[in-house]
Image (tube, rainbow, N blue to C red; front, side, top):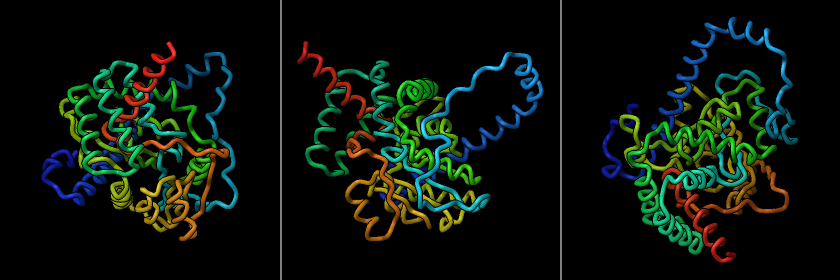
Length: 341
């Protein structure tokens, strides 16, 4: 990946880091897409054999569809133009597609698999408590949480984390998809459009969520690797806020998309830069700031929550590879068990 050969993050300005994070996400997304296309071509050579084998076996009952698949999208939505090669849809993940945060579920899974220790948990509890009490995204605090989390995965094998991500999707994430948003995803897929997940979550978990939902691919936070191991650094930084917009712009250039024909969906005011890029912005399960912005600008609102607000997950929980969120949850669970023992 060309982005991995650039100067170290510390030498770059915030704008350069934002651009680099966006380019790295687009690089990774295109690499995944090319790999999938190669696999499809290679698989086509033995299609006849697989068809024959399937015909020789007794037919099994089909599995029920995933939540939301095949449902009609909510009324009054923009109807995508079928087969428009310059149109695509971009979906945020946390509280937009999923109930809660993908990195929270990943973090819990990592803790349960002994990916890090109780001492690590204690530090993350303090960091998450700070955010919840102060309610602000302090850059120094975020950087500290991010650096600590990344230090935990430095030297770990990428294949190990990818396998864990597959397991966590099956165990937890598959049941957290909002049916209404799933219907919106399907609406764009049925129109023959490319549909992309855009998230601050790690590339490893993002690509699995995208693949399982039938999406084209994912733009996500890219962790630097060397010889199949994590170095403990990110390429550019978290794909958060303006970095998401940079990633969408980078992908649009490569895929020759006309952003005025594209749609984007998010729950957070942090994603206003991304939503502002497209001709069809939607807000889904919005926070208060985004709801106000949408009302002012006439953006369409979809709220799939049943009278309750989605849980607020602090940005430090999104830092690194989701470890902070899982560590915090695990520590609180241990504390509760001790009190009730």
